Length: 366
Ligand code: NAD
Image 1: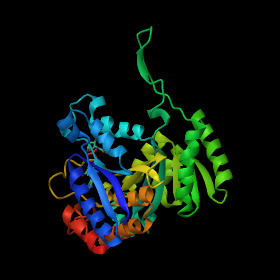
Image 2: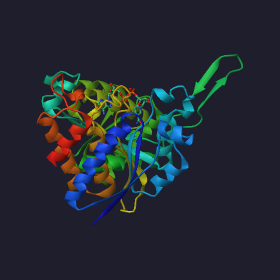
Image 3: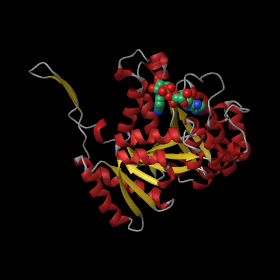
């Protein structure tokens, strides 16, 4: 019986609520598919600050390092807002985790079922069949990490701040390889997004993506788009994309735009894949909902657990190579929602159910 060894970092506010539902769904699918779950919970974020004085204690890193994947909830919230920025849960837990495990490839499905098009701020006529696209964002390079990064006072008394956008060819090649895998598993279409008319890093980006795809995946239909145009096209006709790949900051902005047009954050999952392989010979990865800790919903049985459940499905697919159980979870979520079982965020004022009942419905559809 294959054993799945993963770390569970639930985090704060709704994090533990949706995490326990995702674990119930995983338990159900494991029983049906003859899999053994071998998971260890560890503190992260505000909860870890309260108990250990640090948002990412050494013991939590050790738990993650001993596992094949991390199932992550979300961190942060009003309770820790007064801490200095560098100690804020998101910055002090998530960024170091990404860096520590070199989680360079962020995969975000932008999925909106046809039955939920009313949840999108876009006109339903533009998305009659919903939305089904994938954003691949480079996650460990670019302007967020480049050096120098500093604020200095100049001799004339003025103040200057500098961030540095930097990319190596090898970093661009490895994210392109991830994008190729995603594009091959879908429609064979890949759009690379950059700002090659202005930025040196984007010139290298475009050149490298073009050469890499020509060499390794000539069968793909590769296109390029400037990021300003991409932001407009996403709002105009999102389904013209199938898979798009872009650098860190552009991906940060475009993936949030994608989340908005897809309706509720409660439905959107994500995977961040690492450079190293786990004991299954597959990418080590961190899997988390696209949304945050939703303090407004915490403790009220109101949060939608689907994003966390779908993140667990991505973990089965990418870090454990279990396509069938992953697809079964995804199908069960879709069937539950399509048949009208909805939490408040996707009920449009109609009848809604709570977090636990939503997970029950998903389990019933497995
Ligand atoms: P948020 O994503 O928590 O909430 C934004 C809106 O989406 C709220 O109306 C919320 O109710 C709704 N929402 C989010 N998840 C939902 C779900 N599962 N079901 C139903 N509705 C859901 O963003 P925010 O309010 O800006 O941030 C709250 C806290 O979360 C902040 O401390 C922020 O730093 C943190 N945060 C953490 C992460 C992370 O851990 N990866 C990501 C984003 C924000």
